[in-house]
Length: 109
Image (tube, rainbow, N blue to C red; front, side, top):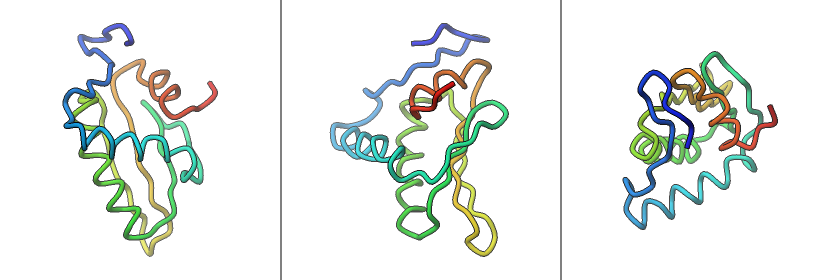
């Protein structure tokens, strides 16, 4: 767990999810590195590029639903660019969240 910054504790609380939800969350979390096309650092965090298809959009929405409960300090955005050009998941948060996210996403810093 990272130290509080501005009163915010950056730690995942998987107890916020049911057993079934934890399983689904874990499956997707493990897949991110394998199915992501690219991970880019952005101001305050990262964004992850995925293939654009309806199934992936639904999976991302489900993941965001879980993530917002177990990591309430994160800001989570699904971005679909016009004409299906790109599908991004943006994860940002309070000061210092970049190192937390880099570890979670397996990004070398």
